[in-house]
Image (tube, rainbow, N blue to C red):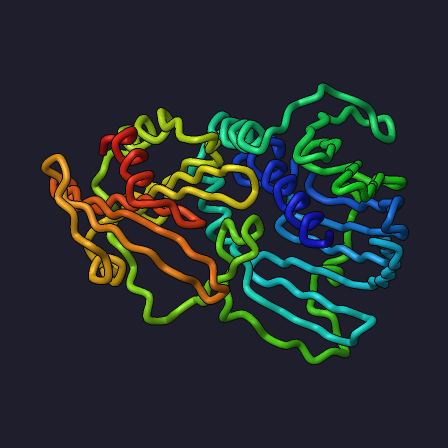
Length: 354
C-alpha cells in the first residue's frame, strides 16, 4: 500500500513540476511558504511542508499512524520522518529508527528538462501523462478559499493551487486516505536552517547513487559511474522522431512522455502500471555496444536490426531490438518490459518506420 501511495504521489509531483507551476524553471509559482496538512483515513496524523526559492528547497515533517486490516489481521505502522531537499542534496531522518541518510538529487537534470521546454510543451507533457494513466481534469474547486484545479489520476484526486497540492484523496484497494491543508501561508518567510543538514545524526551517504528521472515511477535506481562515457548528440531530427512516435498505436499502450535530453531522444509508453515501452534515438559514438554484441543480428526489409533479451538484478525480464540508422549515425532502440516477443517488437518497429 505504501508503494502505491508513493507512486501516485510521484505522478502528482510530476504533474506539478511539468504543468502547473506557471514557470518553465520553477516547481511552484509561489516563492516560499508553509502548509500544514491533516491526514485522515487509514493514515492519521499531520504533515508540515515548508518551501523556498520556488520549490528548489523543501522540508517535510510527517508524524502519523497507519492502520491496515487484511483478512482479519491488523497492521499498525508509526511514522515520524523528516525529509529535506536543498537543490543538489536530499536529507532524510527517521526519528523512530534513529536513522539518517543523504543522497544526491536529479536537480540539475530536472532543471535542464524544465528549461528545455516552453510552458506550452510542459502543459502538453502533463496532458499526455494524465491521458496515459486514464486521468482527467475535473474543473476547479476551493480549498481554504483558494481556487484549485482538480485532477483525477489512478483512483485519486488532488487539488492544485499555483503548483502546490492543497488536498489529496486516495482510494486504492478499498483503503481510503486523504490529506487536506488546514494552514496555508503563501509567501511566508522560511528560515534557511529549515533546509540545512540536521545536526546530531550520522548520515549514511548515498550521494554516489543518482535517481533516474523516471525512478520515482518505476522504483528503480541506477548507480552513477565515473566510467560512464558521455554520448555524442544523435543526429536524428527530433521533429521526425516525435512525429514517428506520436503515431504509434499498439495494444493499449499510452504515451507517457517524449523528450530530448543529453543528446538522446526518448519516448516512453505505458500499458497500465506494469508494462512499459521505451523508444530511444542515440548516437552510435560512445554508445554501449554490449546489447548489440549479445544480440541476434537480423536483416529485414533492407534494414539491420539486433534482437536480444535481458534480465535485471531483480529478475525482471525485458526484450529489445536495435535498428542501425547509418544515415544519422544513430541507433534506434525499442525496449519492452516485461518481455515482448521478436514478432511483437517488429510490429512496433514497422509502425514507427524509422
